[in-house]
View 1 (spheres, one colour):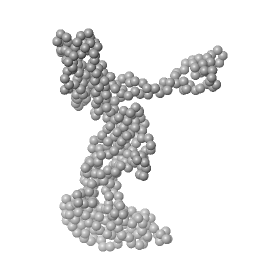
View 2 (tube, rainbow, N blue to C red):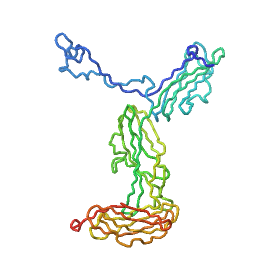
View 3 (cartoon, one colour):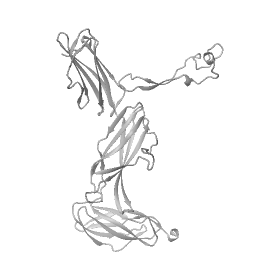
Length: 425
């Protein structure tokens, strides 16, 4: 039987959230001239009257009460990723012996109901007058929105009557951080090893949207099975653990910090070349750990970050070798790699299309390159002649699949600086 009026019960229930104290600054408000910080005259009280050894009048803030610790007055703000802790006390207010006491605590959210304590715990046989049952529970908050703490107490009176009552405590779980991500596709070239490197750069913007500063203990990226990750937030050659953000890693309210990671697709088994990733792929998860100004710890882990791979069409072109500069009116060579991104075999023909940008192809246009199977690649060396000094774009490559009569155009594939003979000397 559930009784609505608690005063009829022999037991009372008290619940208090356990949280760290907070700092409070008390600034005095002065209303009259006779207040101590004022320097009066005549018959008014002066600082010299109160403190004869003081020669000059100090400033008003010298009399303010400094930052002191204040115990929490209510449930306060609870943020996602923090640990909710509370103290539960059941006290026998009567002069009778109470038996078979069972205390159960549940947490109700918008999607589920969790049992925090008392689910499989046997009932306490008896509770003497003025006796109490104390319990501390901890729960890591993993869901936003309204939470209801349900505390239920059941017991038996000396006459054998079974009694039962509940108390509800509602609180809101707020979002502590605003996380935004950006992906940058970078096809870089390693001139020393003559291998292209398909890298993806992830920029994570983390904003503190709480009302107090926090210390960012860890912000790391846990890559998926398809990628390896290199963190770019530490100083190379610096002290162990030294980050690019300086010695202190605290984040003030409404401040934003940017973290950068370099991801690279794992090579295929038996090959040193990265695979061609198409469509949407899972990059990994961000793991964020912080502490508040009073040392309370919080942790958040994002869902799988997804990246849309760039579309290369049926044929992907990589320039594997190109000089930084070349003299005007002298030939130079480049090397290209053509990789098949489709599931069929192609018969390719190379067409060189000269444009008016100051670079001219040398060689036979329309030559047959041969068959290219699914996922296969071929290397081609080409020659150009620079006719105009300056920074020039290499363009005008055309690949034609003779099977389907389909042409693939490749422009602005690389850049080269062209200089005159006098500048080179």
